Image 1 (cartoon, rainbow, N blue to C red):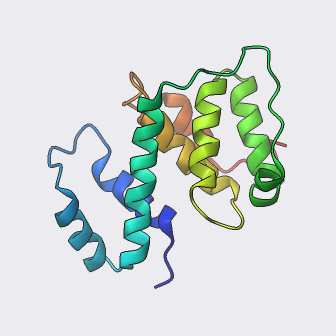
Image 2: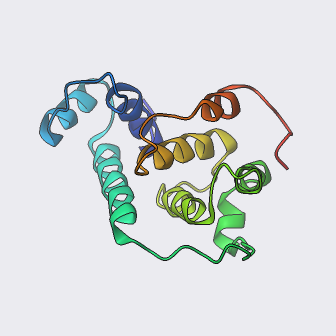
Amino acid sequence: MKENVLDVLMYLFENYMDDETEMHPNRESLQVELQEAGFRRNEITKAFAWLEGLAADQEAGVSPPAARSMRVFSDEERVRLDVEARGFLVYLENAGLLNAHQREHVLDRLMALESDDIDLDQVKWVVLMVMFNQPGEETPQPWMEDLFFEERSGEFH
C-alpha cells in the first residue's frame, strides 16, 4: 500500500474531525488503528508532526499580511504547486473565502507535506483542514462543500 502523509491526514479528518464524533482516542491508540488500516509507521509519524505544526500555526499568533498586499509564490511553491492549485488559492482569497492569514497557514501546511508535486485535490483537503482548525470555523461552511467536492476542472486558473 503506497500511502502518503495526506492520506493519513484525510483518514483522520474523515473519521475524527467532525462534531458528531464523540470519541477522541489518544495518540497511541490512533497509531495502532492507523497501522491496522494499512498506513506505514513513518507516514503516521509525519502526519502527527503535520498536525502538531497545524496547531502551532494557530497558537503562534503571527501577524497577518497587510490587507492590500499581493502574494507572490516562491520558487519552491511554484515548483511544488501546480498552476491549478495556485489558481484555486488565489480564487479563494479574491472571493473573500480565505483571508491572507489563512492563505499563509494553508501554504505552510502544503509545504510541510514534503510532496514533490501538489495538485488541486490536495490543496482542497489542506484548506479544509486548516479552516476546520480556525477558531469559529469548526463547522464546515456550506461553500466548502460546493467548492471542494464538485468537479470544476479549469475554473480556477
